[in-house]
Length: 428
Ligand code: GDP
Image 1 (cartoon, rainbow, N blue to C red):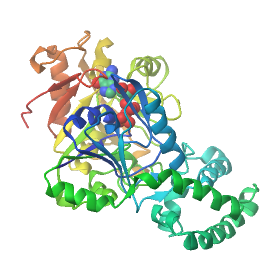
Image 2: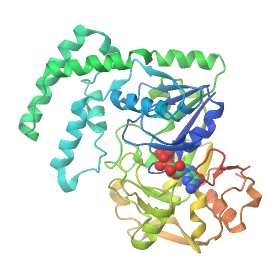
Image 3: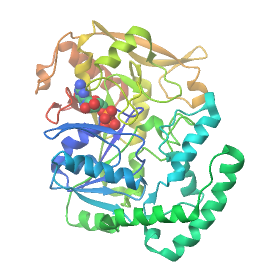
Image 4: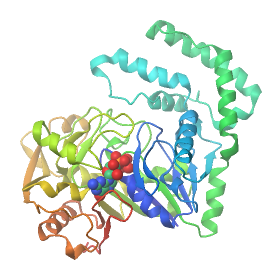
């Protein structure tokens, strides 16, 4: 059985926690897209960890952690991450890296920095992890597949061609130091030796696992609104964030994905530039940022303060629909316990008309939020295990949002820990 865990919003919805929780019953946990640009924060018995490349299942010894072909693989980052967890006493995890995975090259990271510098004010707010240049090269067919590391003839030839091409840009567009083919080749040899123990044919491994009745979790990064096709283009990421892409980025038959758990946060936060209709500012935002998540809403990779906003029903309804949601996991609800009243964005006003359909970017830029205010519950709901024990106003908030988005909220997360979860039978 294959399950996907994906985000409904702009990322940082708490997917890491939900994955960690559902991982208890998973044999394989697979990353299928993205790279080391975003991170999951996980709190468990070993401590608090920010993972950027490793799937959340690395903390269990019954799971294999898989890096699928769709991932932008940064080999040194993967290594440091393995070291950072084993240093804290976590047993060495079983890791499988697809031989079809492509590699983030050192120059991808440089190009990401140089391009953001060149764009200045018009920059994308990239995390400068090399993800956009990586995917550009992948689709321009000049990327490096892990399998190629093991064929030195291909590699030597390719490195020379790469340097010729990249050096034109480095010299004339960016005015930066040039690449040296010998150095690049030496780096790739190091990468080969680092990754060799983990490389395998992931899609065959997963195919066999399905036939043996094993449980596979696909772990998404970011959320629907960062999808390059269906998100807020161009302020998106460079690989698809949708559950459907899990089939491609892991090499699975699409019909095997039976459950799609879409993680939706009880308020909004976003990083990077781009329209954010329900955004709030000033003291109101500072307070939510400070109280949010587990220790504040700051980027797991960059430490950047996140932009904050009220829950956005329009974006979340769309976010859930595009994921093909079977279950919504509604997270970080405990954080809202300090508010007397909680505004929720229930519509967008665009050129004088109100809509609940999420528009294309040019229209989104013009959208103004239509807010409805719900009463707060003014209590700490952490520790509650049964849905009926939640304060009435809290249940009303959940049920109102469920009705607005039109997908069943079957899990409510009321704390960062693995056990801070309330299962619920939805009426829809
Ligand atoms: P991800 O990328 O979607 O996994 O999101 P993050 O790693 O940014 O997770 C959001 C933050 O919220 C992390 O610090 C989690 O530990 C924390 N978190 C997750 N669920 C809850 C919850 O229900 N309540 C609280 N207070 N924090 C949570």
